[in-house]
Amino acid sequence: MRKIIFWTSIVMNIILILGIFWNNVNSPSNELGILKEDIQVGHFMGNKTVFTLPKGLTVQNKSERGLAAIGQFENNRFAIVITANNALVDYNCDKKELNPNSNFYSAEFKTYLNNENME
Image 1: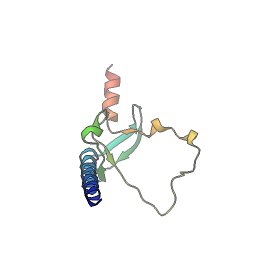
Image 2: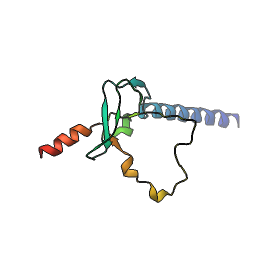
Image 3: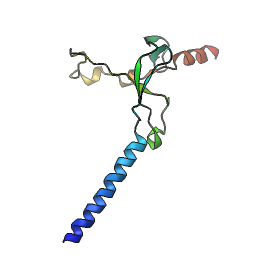
């Protein structure tokens, strides 16, 4: 009985270590950095600026790595964390009101517009 418990423990530890390794290899590094230039941000494949991110803003790397990055359409991704004392977001809204495709923003906005005007 003790041998079964021992070997079960060994196998579970190996699975745990492999899972932690797999997660670290495929997940974003979450490294903090600072924007080097002002960035105009617009809806993905859109044609107008939604907002501008100022140079010097602290951002967090959210680019997928490893197998998780397969199929990623823009490899340089980052996140900005906004905190407030007030409830600024309504999470209990009707899900039909949400437009998941409009939640993608692109910093390649100028490049897309220039390519569209060239065609």
